[in-house]
Image (cartoon, rainbow, N blue to C red; front, side):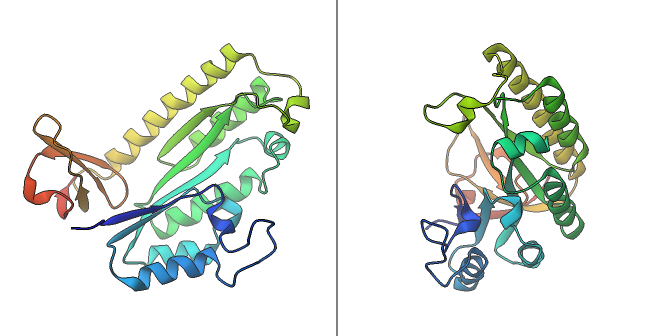
Length: 237
């Protein structure tokens, strides 16, 4: 019984401990939090979801590589692969830093799964800027994308940025990146075929089948076995 896996998520996970204004209110950092979670021993698996590349320190990556309980799976927002668009979005990093972090993760954990958040159609995203993003995502060794289509919100400074990207173009760009995501996940999964990895199976019985995820987030479907529910099972991909 009990949860076997917890996903740590938030808007800016890496800002944990800094208080609302960013002035450090607490003593703990996000790195200290994950070290404390590792030490508690009650939960078998943790995943780090949604940590900005500038807050994902090299020490943290190395620590996860050696961790027993933190899975080799990172979800890291990128938003755009074009530095001018990143600046318009007021992101606190450049694409070069993103590529560097992905490279370090894959050097230390070649089997790691890396998910990426991307926004398409942000004001000022020209065709060339979008091509930059697409090329960048094709080049770096990531596993899947979560693609969001920009939508206008009142009172944001982005409303002043031109040119506005037509809605049809936004949807087209979304489709292009979702196709890329599918290809990336396929390629990532194929790299691991034949490997035996640990799978945590979920409880839902879907027409006699059950689903689970490997440590590195490959989705596994297997014939339903009640004794496997919420259990970690050795499985050959």
